[in-house]
Image 1 (cartoon, rainbow, N blue to C red):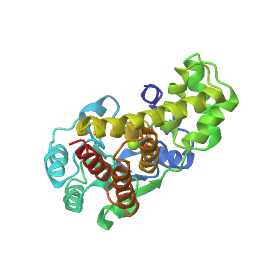
Image 2: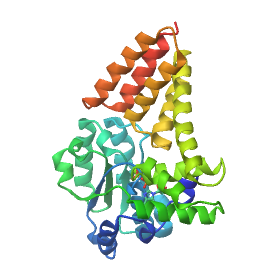
Image 3: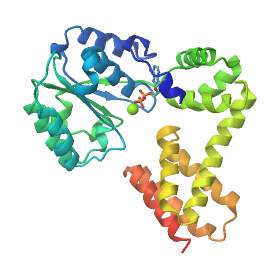
Image 4: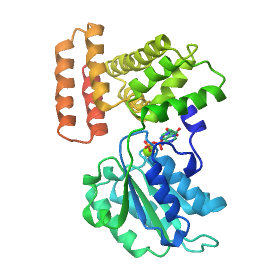
Length: 311
Ligand SMILES: Nc1ncnc2c1ncn2[C@@H]1O[C@H](COP(=O)(O)OP(=O)(O)O)[C@@H](O)[C@H]1O
Ligand SMILES: [Mg+2]
């Protein structure tokens, strides 16, 4: 995957976030002064990458042993905090590093119990651990944690930065790319560089990067995969459907609302005999997500309900 292959490994290679990178670089000159950090902002703009770069730059060769990275696929409850975070933060025997680093991706998905437990751990282990919390929605993080972190708000990646990054990758991969094609990718990506790079890779499998191929591929990857999710769910295979849905959202960066929009369109195309029931189910979950429920849980529940229709 090109997103991984071209993930920056040094802070100085991260584009678009120059103010943030500048202050972080100054901060880690003397790592013992580094506070806990909180990164917020939308998807695909460099939050996780920045956390990993900091870790590498501070811990060097020891990064593997002294970093705990918990990401979206890990459980978010209090059990996880007690088992993984507490255990890791406690073990002693550090040599040659100023502290251990714990990266909690999607920290805003943690239950409030878990956050309270985390707060204690942050306080108790201040001498030997630094936390980097990543949250899309900072208002879901409890105040006592917020107040202990220096917060950095990442902004969506601008057109010039997206295009120059895509040009760099195209060059290295030896694929032909014209300006209009790259601009079209930027338009679809809406400042989400992960999405842009994934789309570039998808288009490259069709041929040169030009506007026509981009439109073909952007429409293609998205909607046909969602058609597929619908088919699998209606066939009663909830686990397979959920896996594919998560892949679309997490790997390809499709937003939950786009997913529902495409799903809605897929229902009409399918001419399924239970169309009205399916549409009502989709509408119900669309609303629940709108009012702020956990969208991954809601979408899974929706697929569960759709798969029941097969019985
Ligand atoms: N600011 C950036 N500079 C360079 N590459 C980036 C940047 N933001 C995202 N990317 C690319 O997108 C991928 C996903 O970025 P990531 O840091 O995981 O985003 P998120 O903000 O969702 O944590 C990276 O592997 C990298 O290839
Ligand atoms: Mg991330």
